[in-house]
Amino acid sequence: MALSDADVQKQIKHMMAFIEQEANEKAEEIDAKAEEEFNIEKGRLVQQQRLKIMEYYEKKEKQVELQKKIQSSNMLNQARLKVLKVREDHVGSVLEECRRRLGEVTRDPARYGEILSALITQGLLQLMEANVVVRGRQADAQLIQNILPSAVEAYKSTSGKDVVVTLDTDFYLPADATGGVELVTQSSRIKVSNTLESRLELIAQQLIPEIRNALFGRNLNRKFTD
Image (tube, rainbow, N blue to C red; front, top):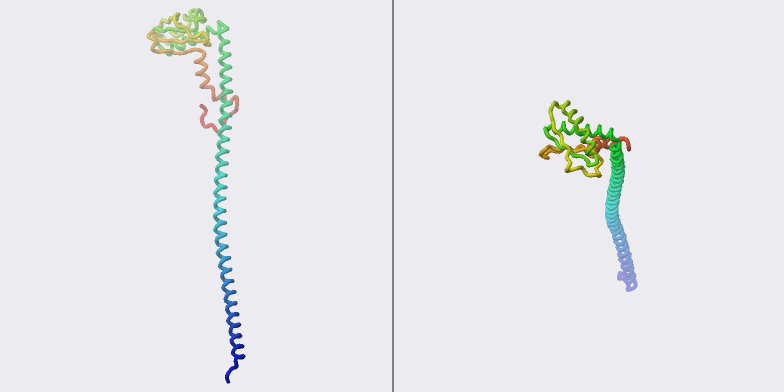
């Protein structure tokens, strides 16, 4: 039975509605899939950038921490150096006070004469020469001249050798020297410095560790005591 135009139009509309519905459903499916893929890609990119940002700031944090450690170490070293400088200055002031007081020995002629005699005898024993020249301060010339015989006798008694000792009246130790003597061979090639300053310096080098311990206590971090 042939379809009327109205029936044909009705079927066509029905088919068009069906096709449109199918198209809409397909479009929604595509949109949903596209949205899902978009969200997945967006999440991946966000996570990727997030990791990069975390790595960047972690690296920066490590750099800051390292810089803090370096700065702290530098400040600690500077503080230690300052402490050491203050301590060395204090030890130096103690030695300077010793030098100042050393000059007081020369005010007692009897005691100073004994010291000079011992210094001359010691110098003679170091040189072990037959002819020796003694130099002292001009202010001590007479005192040295007076004690030379006893110093020579002490040398002979200890060494069993003779010696001729002459006081140098052409060259003297500086007037501002604390005291003591220098002994030189007749050829002036060998010299023994037995001034009070040189003896103090020698003793100070030996006693500086003890002086440090007495002033500041024992340093547990110091491996050597020199």
